[in-house]
Image (cartoon, rainbow, N blue to C red; front, top):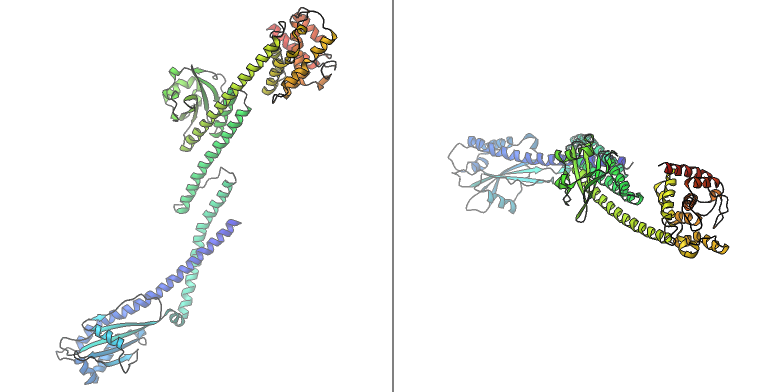
Length: 607
């Protein structure tokens, strides 16, 4: 709606502009024609005088003009007729002629004759005397001035004095010049016709030019609105060679640049999120390679991570698992693979020959470039991408993405360092627990391995497996608060001692309760001694009210405990352990989980 209103306003403006232009042309035509008319009369008098006067006064006798008008009126009348014939017929009523004479020793001017406009005056005005005096000795005086359409007179002066004359003779021609308003009044029909023609032409030309301008501008405006709403596929195309065409091509170039930047920002945002959701460097780089490939029309992308001994292919799109993990020695790598500059390099045929067994020939297109990923003075990785042709915008976008990948890798390094620290702390705690008794050395790690294997049997995701691993390592952390004398007692425990032993799940829960993100782990630690039939501790939960993580830990914990020697008994044989587990189905253990666990330990026994 706004564009239609804008088009109508543009049409109106252009039409009014043409009307105004037409009126200006008409006004200028009037001024020109009027000025030219005056000049034409001047030229006529100038051209005809010398010939006509020579014919009339072909004599050496002095002062013939004075004698003609004073002594011989018939000659004067003939001269009047000749001068009158020089005036165009359509200007007879607008032009006056006067002939003045003057003796050199006399200050007075004599009017020999006057004809037409202006009327003969009894006395000659001082201003006219001055003009006559200035015309002496000059063949003609005509001062063209700027005519702006005001009503007035145009004065011409011709010196008719011959060499034999004793007096001066000046012919004064006075032209009445019509003003614009008087002209319009006298030429109403002409004015109306002219105005109608000008308005009609203005409307036609205005409509034509308005449409030729408003349509492409309206189209550009509609496309710009779509682009502003997020439609990045809009193209501003135009074959015009004028300013509108230049504007369209400029907008198209600008939109293409913005689209590249917007796509790059989206990809960078996805890379940021990948850092938070990825649990490993390999997982992160796989996502990164996929995101970059998607931005560049699913073209091949490879990421090489640099190590001390060479570059490792850590991600490849399209996925070729057979090549992942391959190491290329730095000795065989191109020099630009080793420097720490930010230069994006195009890979030569020799470079590609080195990598063809890894990248595979079918992934290589017309252009392949290598983009360095740096961390201060260290080259962390190299990003390789291949497509038919790379524009300047493509290279700029890849430079931005490489920087973001560097940020992601640095973040992953920090995450891995924190994880390594966390693992170290967990292992230290686990070994502290196991060190409380020589009989439980390695117990927590074995429970962790068995629990993880069962979790994978259940097709648990990476995060769930991670929680199982941590919960298994920490499941007996509460035993740090149990005296070694009770833990290593060779005989049966008293009721009071057993009560102390049974407190270790709660103690463990209390120890880790302030650790953020450990809610699932806490449930495993607190409930790993609950039983399917509800006879367990500390909360007497039964059936599926027992958290799944705790039911998994119970199976792994009991199996390892009965399989190992204790101060009060010898460990079970595999067959005895298997039988014991079967016997406790539905009492201690979840029957369905038990079946999976039995198949698991059977597979381990076979392996």
